[in-house]
Image: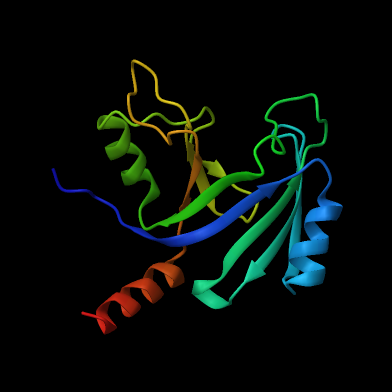
Length: 160
């Protein structure tokens, strides 16, 4: 069966800790990334600083996350590497096809993410109904905007 979508590249890595201050000291102060935004969500129990590596369509976010309440779920700080985000060229087609193949998604469906793109998450654990999952890793699928799709297509064509 032909896959109706492409994974284009890494969109983000999300790193969690009990306090963003220590994360900022490394990623911002020592490594020189700049904070490009902040996202706070009670529903997702997160206060995150959005930093960046690179630029344009090849920019990769590094999200530095701390929980709003360390005793509530989701526990964005419980796993230091919280999740990896992948650019997807056609998110709805990816979700439909992956679901039909038995891939388990986390609750919430496709929704607007912290950076303003449509997102959804592959569940880290499989179950009887959906036997394929992230094998312990939370994976975010992110709808790539047109300029990112075009940039990756141009890159691929130049190496063909």
